Length: 366
Ligand code: 5GP
Image (cartoon, rainbow, N blue to C red):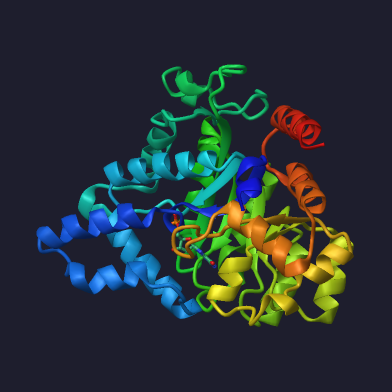
């Protein structure tokens, strides 16, 4: 697996609260336990448990949110998650998170996102680039110099550097109004590295029609859209999602033959999360994973972690797993990582710089 740690990688499907270190969750749980707000012994085994069914995963997220949803902790986990990805040579990370409102602690969707941005600004272990290079969508109101302070290219300094862009998630439990509020917030925060919208949350909850207006508005305004699609056999919804033509989809597990045909002809890139699919039992075994068929069809795909904390994985592990499960060599998988650059939502300048990083890595591999 070491080899996979060393090579540059691109992560396009990572949920902030799913990527928190176990050690941090345990520390937070212990602290809330001491305050008498939760019973530590009850949550300890839940945090450390291995396999989780799809239903259990969403219960676990409710617990994680109890532990992490205050401004200070959101800032902390953002910083840690970025440093963790950078430490295994993820050179570009699209981090997604659901802006949360919690009146009892004075949290609005906006203040939640400000806490995330503070996390980006407080990354110290590596160099981080999170503000847009082009001025196309720049919002003058948010051009804050102190925020861009870390955004310096230390080329040749020997320090690791990571590009980070943000996607704001709409949770399927939310109302149409809350979804629209998230999209409007994303538009206001473009100058701070927000590039798109994700639709996620428990796939057995909610209706596609609830989010459609917000997603359409996002697209009209030039935000990119990625959808969790086909995590459960909800065929009508899968069909409607493919017809929407999002810029990417996540998972794509329960597609039927006509849906595969539609997906392949649309060339919508698929974010593949192998460990997540296996651990939630969405796919029973890797031998029958749709990765194989899509890879043969040369369909655009990206290997991703989904929730590296919850599923005890890392992007290096996902590459190593793809290599052993599908018999792909280093050369093929390096190419897959390199091709991922085409599907990022950041501007052309970032794309170009990432291409150079991969060219230089390819030279060293030969
Ligand atoms: P957050 O948005 O709070 O930073 O990250 C956790 C949230 O991401 C979960 O509450 C859930 O809404 C979403 N999420 C994480 N993993 C998955 C997944 O595998 N499928 C779906 N549909 N949503 C997920």
